[in-house]
Length: 79
Image (cartoon, rainbow, N blue to C red; front, side, top):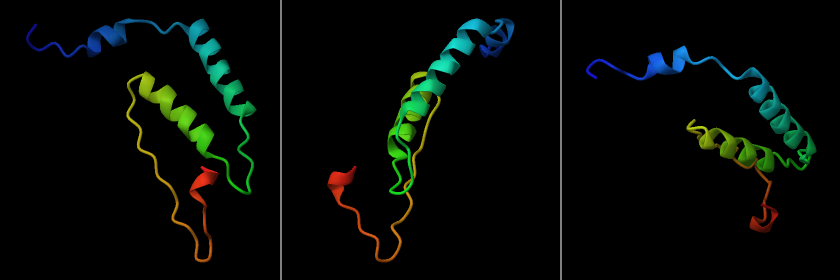
C-alpha cells in the first residue's frame, strides 16, 4: 500500500445528503434552543456543544475566552 494516503477513498464516496441534511437540522435546532442571550453572554453552552460535535467527527477545536474588561469581575459559580 505504498503511496496510499486514504484520501482517494474519501473522495470516491458520495455524501449521504439526506442524512447530512437531517443531522444539520438537528444541530441547528439544538443551538436555537440554547439561551445565548447577551448580556450577560451565555455563549459557553453553544460553544461547548459545537466543540463536542466537531471533536466527535475528528475535527480538532481550540477554545478562547476574552480577557475581562477593567472593572469587570466574574464569579466562578457563573460558569
